[in-house]
Length: 281
Image (cartoon, rainbow, N blue to C red; front, top):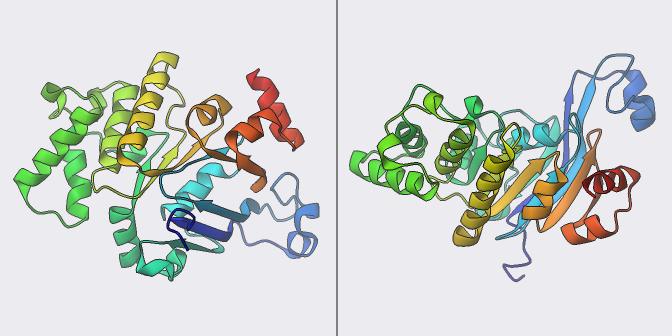
């Protein structure tokens, strides 16, 4: 099959629950839940039978309200959380033949450090606030096996300049930076090993509108220059409209609608998507 129609990342039947479940929610399934919560045993079904494909050079948007499961999905893809069950394959890893979720901890570290980059909503999760900005990038490079100090410093400078961090601030700790600068350092760190896939989780939440716009412009520019594949999660359809080629809409742990972003914005089918789109107008 032509490489442009073969997904770079494929996910099938991804489930993530918090709690063991009980006879009530296991036997009645979706009908037994209040949203994605079992009122009998308290189990939360954060992700339910999620399937997605990400193609080379594509931006896939995932939109949904708080608690819809979109951030849990991202943490599962980056191995911050173990899935309950499911499959994921990356074409450039073992020829796309190995389920990533079944790999050893060592192999998962390799995948994180070489094939994935992650930018979290909260920079505290993605950065060491007391390290220098350039030290944060070096940490990711070292995790991937780099040992040459000069090469790491050169790569760090190059990336930080690319995301508009001034040279004279590269040795400063991110705790001294504004929220927008912290996100830019996270983006530089995530890109340090040229991963084919970048995961962005609510990267503009909590930023001023002008700062949001500059971070989104930077992501758009980097995606064009590097032809990187991106999954971006947001509760803001405006962010998705600006960046995403295709969009998945999540509600209560399930995908309720998906398609080309323009199509979803112009002709939403699901009542929740219609509500989201109307709130944009």
